View 1: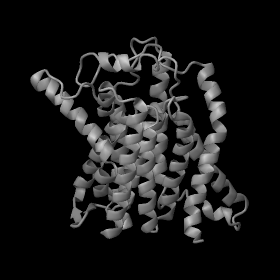
View 2: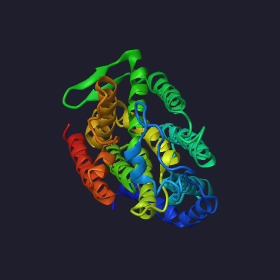
View 3: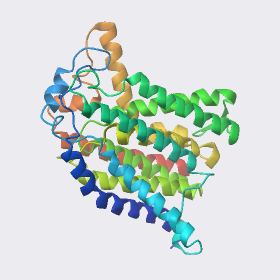
View 4: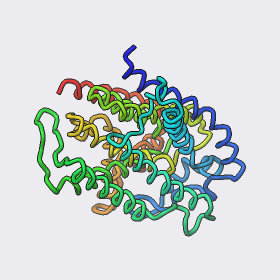
Length: 357
């Protein structure tokens, strides 16, 4: 078998096994310390106002299911990276040492974004579970989390522009588009859009499954570009998510929440740009295809907010969109499975377009 394929698949397997192995410890900690909301519901919805439909749908889960389940994913990724990095130091000439994918040229930057997102997301969750439902019931204010995302993206965008000399993006079927210095604010804009899509984390197994297929697609795209370290990182994330999903499928043992979703969306932003001009591909313009469910989720939220502000009426029973389907009477598992099917198809179509163009 091609050694490049092994270098991508083995980290995914290791991450899955590591995630399964550490879950009992994490689960014990989360339940022992009752790491969940003390008051059910959101309290305030998008665009202001209450969230009675959402609160009714989730009143029995919010206060007895732990948050911070993203620790499983992050722990699996950290163990996998550390294992191969240590092995390279201990036995640099061994075959396993060649599996170390933490490199300055490809993966330092996305891992940096992952770590920043994990730290801030963990702090946000900590505020939620430590509060009595009043001041910090919603965790860090949205504008503060957005400031972290924007600030990190500003640094990463500057790094691409200044250090990697990237100022273009490739459009499918068109070619490179020169953005010059506007590349940096565009990078920040994409990062904010991807993070805003994190509201898809709201039903058992939903966010994990959707993100799994997105990272799987970018692993394939990076592999075809011979960016094997990025492909290995994406595959490692997929392995960690699969371990998480083993315990997150309905009924969920824990929720991913900001600890995981913030880290993954911030990391995804960098990977999307790494698979664009640097990889002689179309990573950015493929995102609306591969991540169509994220686009639809953000779009539905925007429509709901605009409609409520402009007309005082709602387009959907409740936003985000997956909760609208719940309100229509769809069982949560049916919403999740159908999103997974659509996510898989979007990933396949995205990879086909990447190869074709």
